[in-house]
Length: 107
Ligand SMILES: [Zn+2]
Image 1 (spheres, rainbow, N blue to C red):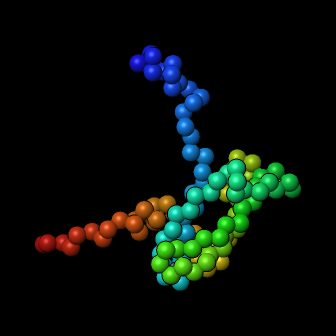
Image 2 (image 1 turned 180 degrees about the vertical axis):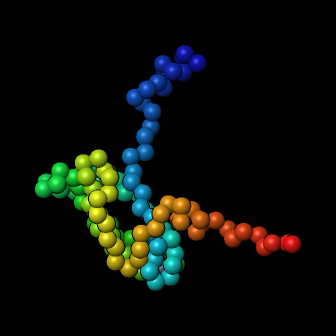
């Protein structure tokens, strides 16, 4: 155990620094999970010291384009968001939408 800790300890732990957006298509109702790369997708906002993001995405059902605009503070907290062609949903709502429907009650 001590040996492994030396090999893989501390700072080398892989970290997912992605930001996830959960949206629902306004046309067909399909839920979508979109990964945003902090390094490549976010643009510095010199006025606020944070970041802005414009993300275009489409679902895999009707393939209609949605366009989201978000603002982040310096710690990557979302401070403003708007979307055309769909709506933002919570992660819980997304997860629920991807679950198979519950089996029919047998009572
Ligand atoms: Zn759609």
